[in-house]
Image (cartoon, rainbow, N blue to C red; front, side, top):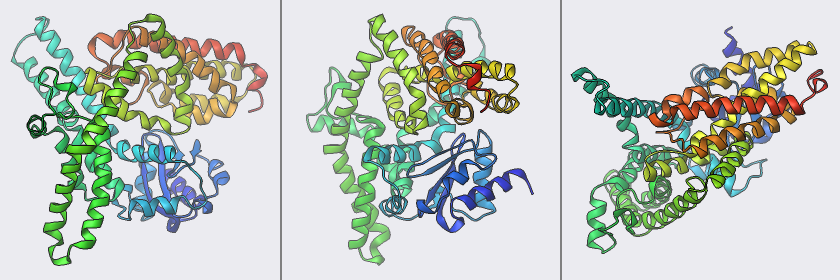
Length: 473
């Protein structure tokens, strides 16, 4: 039997069998399963299963198996073991949440972040591809303008790259609406329509009619195209799910196909215009101002300190699965600043782990700990390429102190990246893979930041981790 099939079967056995799994999906390194009864899962047995690098508890049980393998195992669970994919689950969102909460305790913040993760994780491949296309397109445009290259062939290449990039990022709100509808149990096409409403040109016409438009500074309008960003889209689709369910109960079956979507969208459209977009826009504007004080500060000292702290603290956020909650902030930055400065800073955390892992490997070699050397050798390439979870769950976290020293070392790279104003065109994996995601003028400084984080993680780990710490792990 193929190794991934064996692993899928063992994982399924430890979580209570197929009958205890509502759905399965995956991100880059994690198998994600929504369970009917979390108390039936043997977490200790799951963590001890060969091939499992770590387990993250939450509304969705996350099993870390590594890059590439996560997708393969998820496909096997769906195709060979008959589990439903996450997007195919039709149960009401609140009912699913109640089922998952059996045997678990989690606050509203954790619930919200799990929901955001469920919305955006399926979009990550498109986000990465679009960011790279836009970055290459921007680079070609600059080179054409400076006459470094010329000719219709290069012009065509620029157009194709920008076409592919804008095909996703230009309609990000619509894709978000569709996935939010999947998550909340609304009709997916209607969720896409809610997202489209927020970027429709008619929003400005409505704003002018209602006296809410600022002609001098359109972005300062109470209501304008894109106001509220994807935060408004998510809130709007959540309302859509509630309204659609209520309307469907009231409308006779014979009229459901016509009147349910019609009445639902009318109610939601009015709510978006008069409440959701202005309120979420106010929150987004406040967030942009706060980010401006911390992230885009003109004070070099503030930039250095904030860059260090953000990079140093990012690994605990990844450990808790909170990092997906940053995606709305990335999107707000991209919309308001034309680039994302927070992502390059946080990407330094993974590089700090790489440096720490190299230091541990050298100490393990001295004490002849072949097991930890083998684990690092397997996880290190993924870490260099921006997939940090194998190093977290296989190396630094089990050892304890290196998890801290890796973050402390990464902080130096974060300080450099923040101080030099590195900007990305989108977001995705960190590490060297993120180089094409950087804006042309930021690529070199991002690379230098990565090197600084490697060195920082290596030196601090070498200083504070003794050979005896890795001798018997």
